[in-house]
Amino acid sequence: MSSKPTQPTMSEPKAIQGETIGQMRTLAHDLSNSIETVMQASYLLAQASLDDTNKRWVELIDKAARDAARINRELRDILRAHS
Image 1: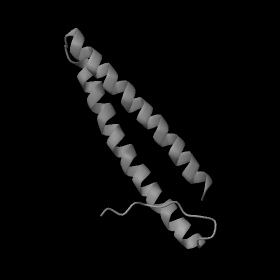
Image 2 (image 1 turned 90 degrees about the horizontal axis):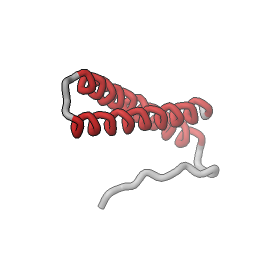
Image 3 (image 1 turned 135 degrees about the vertical axis):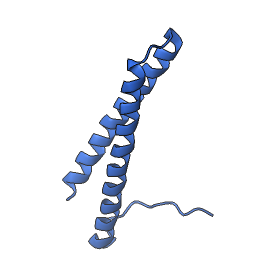
């Protein structure tokens, strides 16, 4: 049986909401680090001599990493607004 995180409600104490926001900030930071690693690896792969099929894969990975970075920035902006 897995425990699923729940959204804090307006009736919950602010300390619980603050703890949840803190956990989300930590996760967003860790996600940023992982995305940065993928982006660096994508950049290095793009510098290699690749055939057309593999170049398309690298482009797909690069676009997905950039999208993930944008989404993570938006998430962090939302978290900053709830400071």
